[in-house]
Length: 221
Image (cartoon, rainbow, N blue to C red; front, side, top):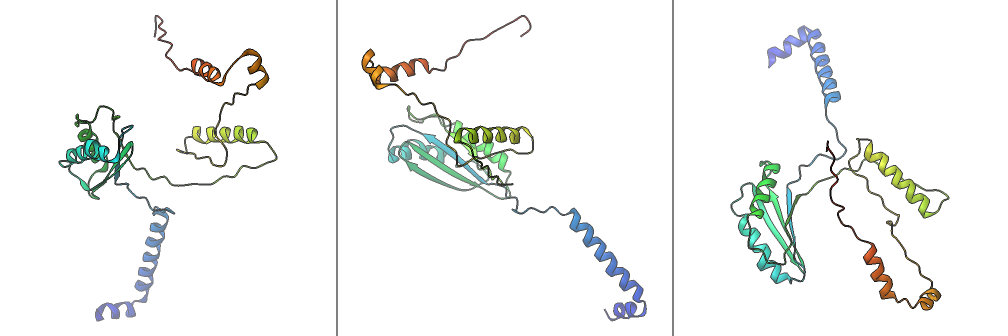
């Protein structure tokens, strides 16, 4: 160590060159470093959600949760499994290990849940999904001397433009009500034609239907 100090004292130019090299390397590293305001976190949470209309929490626990937990026992890469049973619905939360491939774990969990064939008859198909973390980029405020309908149309247009830009994956709008259809009937006309509210509801249900129109085939398609 003493010889190194003596060398730099005797030849100070080499000390200055070393400081310059360190400065340049640090400057290059600064511009090539990936910087995020919020650190990227690899989500390790997988959720299995099952709906069972009319079932009590105990029925959800015995008929759904325990069967899924038993099927997950042989799956590798699981750190912890927890569950919540409520009326009509149950959720099983799986936490994966940090060192394990989360996409592979998601596939293994789906396969394990699909193998369970003894769910109650009224239970719906399990939904398996991985928690996705989103990062908020910017917040926009739209205001003006206009009615709610005009503001709603403007926000829908802005949303469509942002989503079609290819640079934004998700847009969340708040503060405006969702679109709805309102049917207003004159009480005088209802009495004149002898129409009841049940008749109106039945007529709306008959006309508000969504059915397939079949298929249209041509010589090319």
